[in-house]
Length: 366
Image 1 (cartoon, rainbow, N blue to C red):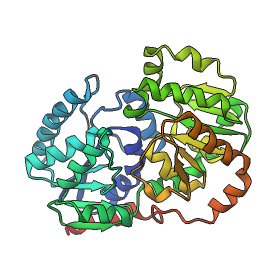
Image 2: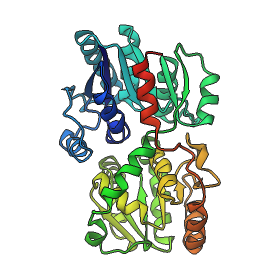
Image 3: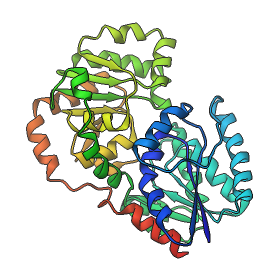
């Protein structure tokens, strides 16, 4: 019996690994344990995600959340180490670049378990981003490196990891979006905010290197009123906290073309984003998703670990108000033409079979 632990810590990880967990659960000779670290500390919200995605209940919730990253990771490592030993785990699976992934990789290393890194090989080459360090360490400790693209494979070939091999699988986000877009069509989010399809842009901002910098947030708030369409902004708790800290929350509230909402569910967000004119975001996951439902992304960063989208599905606008406004308004003015062009471009992150490929490799014992 092959015993596989899948470590989840954030909502994007739940979304991206849901199909893989479902496939592994159906395999003979495999026992799957789902572990939630608590990194996204609203477990009830994450549980809603799990129910929406029809995932089995988790086996253990570590509940490690209310501490800073420097304190959270060691606690996660200790708890995961104990769990892996107690359950005699053979393989540990984690996806992406979060602190939960870093902890899973380290705990696997300390206990001699085979670590499978899904979405391996991504690089922004920007060490200001904590996620970049997490990616590098997770890749170097991986036994199985599951790369989503050829660029990721090339990055892995330059590293020195101990692994069974580098496997080009595609990204699991493709099948997640393909499967869930139909369910998202039942969402009433557009009715709730009073906007029609193609009448707005969507803004997300949550990354530490962005929202923890007052100058970057001031540039964003300077740009928003100059963008020639309504902007729907489901505001992340971290962003709200930092806007309040810098005394900027009131300034956001009076920008007339911005519709601020509370964080919304996955299906609501899919419906909102896939029917928008464009997206403005610092999220790597949204860069991937946009290439699936064919929307353009103005990336609110100086670099990206998803270079596959550049020149096709998006561009870098950095933290500069002038660049953000220029990029957004160009897409708005030429929206119909750009959307037609995007509709003809193949998604660079795979064909929707990544989870199936990964499961076969894990079960085959390569």
